[in-house]
Length: 589
Image: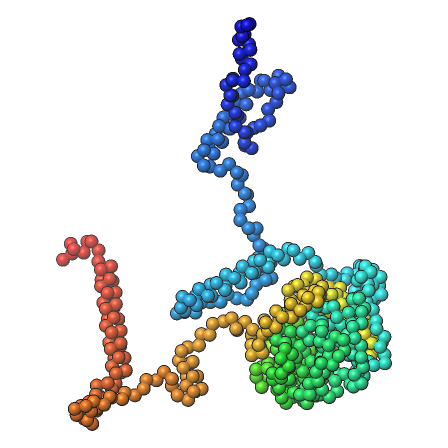
């Protein structure tokens, strides 16, 4: 056999396993050039490579010691929120903790304040996700926007926006009053001579149409698009969206104006006999009937902020009403003549009134003082405020829209104007749309007003695109969250405040209500004892021992307080004496 050569032995499979190299980490330099592609310049820079090796060793040592090698975030934490954006979602002033409050109350106030602050910050952050912005109308140089006609606006905008300007010629049963649903999708019109119709005005789909063969004074949507109320000549009727009569409420007679409070499910009505009545739509009962003693009530508006009803009267006053009181909350003298129309903005801060004295006045409801007024040559018969604060005033056959009216700025020239054929009888802005609905003697007109509607909507409250199933779910939730009519008042924030009335005041009110003092101690009645110990003399002795116990306790407390004060005064005087002495006083004679 041939001898095995050493070369063959080296190629056997029993050779030593070479140590595996550890995988390179992301902080180590993995890019190495091949020796074949090296340039002479790279060979000269070996010193730089040695430095790189030392940095790699330092990094590995840092990793062994537990130091992190990740890059620090230059902007740690959440992004800061601008102060102006936070003020936009501010929820009133912070609640102060009353003196002497218990720990449980302090914890509850702290938790509620933390939750409100968190909600404010979240709302301010998510405001960036609302890209929609309000529109506006801008004319050319030396051109007034009130000279631009509706036909020119409809031609300039896109097809869907242009279709929002239309006319319904209904000269036979006019003049018309109107109302938009809270979602802004449906329109309800009612003619003076009995014609009632509800329409999906965007698709022009007619849902129902009928003639009640009786005078119609007002129409109003209820909590959903499935029900609406009609104030007819004698009584109040409620119909569904198909025109089927659901109820005839005979307690509500001669109704002239109506307002629906959506969060309370209350339908407020003002009648020709001077009565203000509230109907709870959820249970079908009359909540309150108030005799105002102010004559015919044909001017009515509601404050969306606190659900207080505003009524205008022929003597020039405006009164504010709540179903909890038989008397008016506030009575204001606004005009020298009768009040013709009222409007309150959505924040509940400003009220706009017009009267027979042909003046238009803006009031601050918080102080109940007029901010400014202006003179209109023909006077305003109808007023309406949009979600963005635009004011529309109807004077005869002309509708004028004013901008920047609310606040301290005086009323200037109109922002837009439009002339119609018949006498105007009703005005209403469509929610979440730049549309003004006008009811007049010749029918109905939908007018485009850029910048009138709120561009972003709350889908949990009023969703214009909700389905039938979503509407049903919303109705159930709204009924569960219904606000009771007892909570209606001028200051809705008063509910979240702590009652700081003194114990003595509440105790006095309790005595007046009950007729006796529930905390008063019963008189001492000695027990009967045997073996002659319950004789008349013994009973009197026991009574004398117990008598004047309260006075004795008060005397003891006063004596203890007096002794404590004397001790404190002595200690203070001793401290003063010691404080005045110095180390050199011992050497003095």
